[in-house]
Every structure is written in C-alpha cells, then in structure tokens.
Length: 104
Image 1: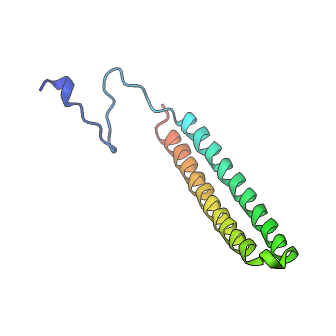
Image 2 (image 1 turned 180 degrees about the horizontal axis):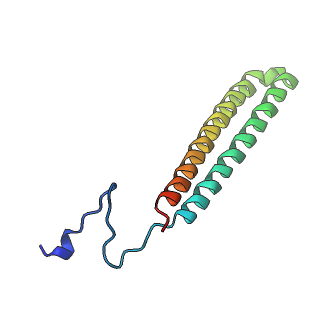
Image 3 (image 1 turned 90 degrees about the vertical axis):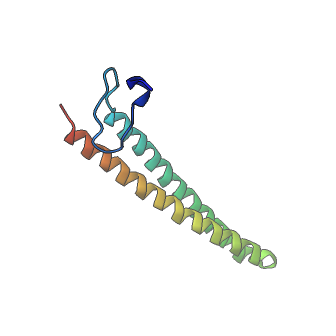
C-alpha cells in the first residue's frame, strides 16, 4: 500500500492533508440553529395537538379513552422534540466555541 492509500482520519488532533478543505464552522452553526428551530416548532405543534386531544376527550365522552391515549402520545412527542431542540442548541454552542478556538 502506498502513502496515498494509508490516509487515516482521526477525530482528535486531525492535521489537514494537502488540498483538504477547512471545516466551515459558520455553516455548522447555521445547520444546528435550523435544526434547533425545527425542534422548537415540533414541540409547539405536538403540545398544541395534545391540548386539542385533551379538549376532544372532554367533549366526546364516548371516545374519551382514545383521545386520552392520543393526548399522551402527543405530549411525549412534545417532550422529545423539546429535548431535540435542547440538544441542537448545545451543538450550535459547541460549533460557535470551536469557531472561536480555531479562528485564524
């Protein structure tokens, strides 16, 4: 095997090979910001749907059990989407921090 075939990519202390592009931290920040906003939107939408199902459960006693289950599922989805938004917020902060560390 020649030297060209033995290129290893390491996660830490990676030295740029000749011709390799630098990491675009600004693009990464925007990516995580967009995903954070999608998570927030998902949390709001799922929360609104949970409230809608709660109202339906009171309004239709004959289908209350079905609406209660759908309400709980929507509430769980809202919590999950909120957690995703929180995760992406911290990924965005890490990208911002790395951008300042590696700034030329």
